[in-house]
Image 1 (cartoon, rainbow, N blue to C red):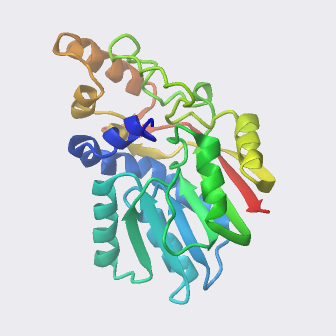
Image 2: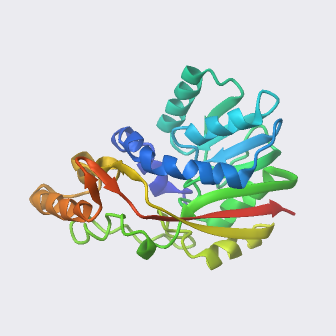
Length: 271
């Protein structure tokens, strides 16, 4: 039997890869207010955060539902789950918990939930219909889901993948029965709506957003990340030059960049 999300499981449990994740958060944090607004969380609700990463959005959800509610973060990364739990303890937030789990297939303790949320965490399922069907099963009657994902890559010129074409190995083709994963896997809003409806969700709504936050330049990529992405020593100078040229388009000051982010928020209810 083929392992679920094998490539993502390896990537998100790589100590070096996880260590650079907090550098990316200043960019993704700018989307959190939009997601929380779409969620409209109420005191006492039970929330599941899928792909909870470093836990910031889960902690924000826990604070929104108050001490009568709970927030549970689930992520395939053991290391990020540990970071999230540490952050919650340091913040003194007690109605939140985190667990390492693959929500594509696993039951999450605490179900049924009132709300499922995700901030850029649902694009990495290699069987998205299976995953959203499982997510649907974790919601109680009338439960709701809201998640953010990127619009298509051509709407997001900040993405460094194009600049590094030919300098990093191409991703392997998905195995039979699997779907490509990655930041833009849910970029086609029509396909994403179809996945949600096939999984049993109704009243699917999508809102597109464009945002240009100013963030540190290294939120996108630095030399350590280039090496982790597979840039060979012989190509490192070319990769550095390509990234420098890429970032120059967005430079707004020393070490700063204004990045045009095109994302979308989906909302739906469980039948």
